[in-house]
Image 1 (tube, rainbow, N blue to C red):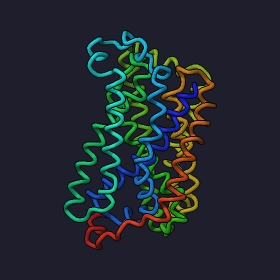
Image 2: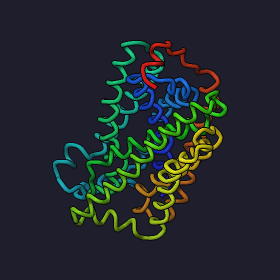
Image 3: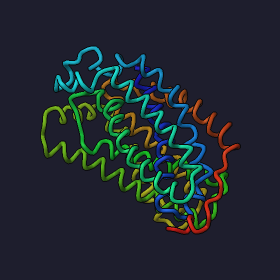
Image 4: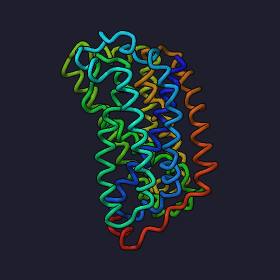
Length: 327
């Protein structure tokens, strides 16, 4: 049970760093003033990616407790998948390589300029999709190896972007990005990411419902038991409806302080959503272990980001023509 709490905490804080990674890659392609406004929050979060090479180590020892296919490969629907892909050495290798690649690309996204940065942004986004698709299977879907969803990795990607934006919203008043005009830009991005999260969550359920396949139905039926319906309801309220409806009020949309409060709610909702994905097979007590994992992993991550990296990292100013490319 402690293992699933650590996993949920790891995925939550990693999601913020990877969300910042994706946002920096998008900005490398599109340009815009919003990137410079959010740098104070995004750059330290991205720079913390190497920390997860250490924070992920406990998962290597907890694999038998988390993933049933480790002890019993027959739990995987197809024997060739178990033999060639879903096995402990392969999962450890994919996890380590993914974290190394993200850690290596992160400083380049911050330091490069011009055409080199634009090209790297495209490569980083494509590579991120591939790596996230693998890890979404290894670290989440394979908790129940009978279930699969083609939209699952895309849903995680949008959740990561929402997490990065929410983190930026929480920190913007103290990061020097508190101008009302820029707050409106961030509010619009939060609305778009929240819409994506709600849509992809609904589509995965709708696809499983129409398909009416026993393995997919069993995955959702497990989450009908208390307290998981309430966990999902709170998650969607905080990470979906709050950032969608809050910015509709002009006073909220243009207020960095209001957006900071929305950002806190969004982060709480995303944490609950991750627990809803990972925890039901381990019982209701996984909520408690999830809270402990959130604090344990978060203590290391926030200590590095806020205590060490943020005071020292300032990305070089983006040239005016590059910043004005869009937005």
